[in-house]
Image (cartoon, rainbow, N blue to C red):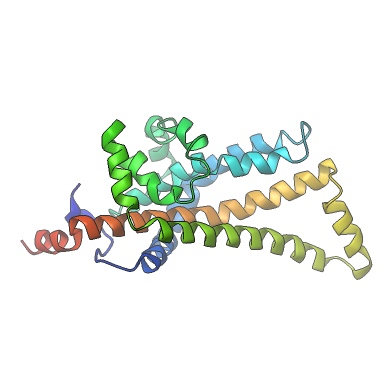
Length: 241
């Protein structure tokens, strides 16, 4: 990796500060992130919503379960953004074999419920190691950092829940006072229309929040590599000489 080409200022940071840096990275490259990833998210959302007639709860569960697969596209954009490169959907399309289909099975099965999945995802997607070498790398990156990665994951999980509930409450507040109790009964009644509306609201929350979750994990990953490999020093020397 050409450390001197990284556009992000590298220095050892507390992990919570590194997470904030990831959020800022997403904000700085918001156009690339959402223009590139929204089509991918939209396909998953439409396929999930089409399952509403099978079971009313299924669309939301499918959207939740496929988030790690959608995260791979976001990480692709952010890994290029870290080097100051903008990304278009055409770039993602050309890299679809590595981004969409590499490691997809593990992402959706035994690693799906990992409380530090956005922190360890760059190891699987960007480093290209396999077998024992990858397991050792993952153990090294997680050493002393499981707590920080889990807390970041928990913070975004709570934010997602609060945004979803807040969106439903906001819609209810826009209704006339006499219809609010009926709206709540409609939301919780399990009808197809209510399930479709709930899943659509959840999809909107995921679309807006998930890139920041991936960005926070990616920045924490970079920060851990700075701690382990002194990237900040190497970056300064390469730029100087």
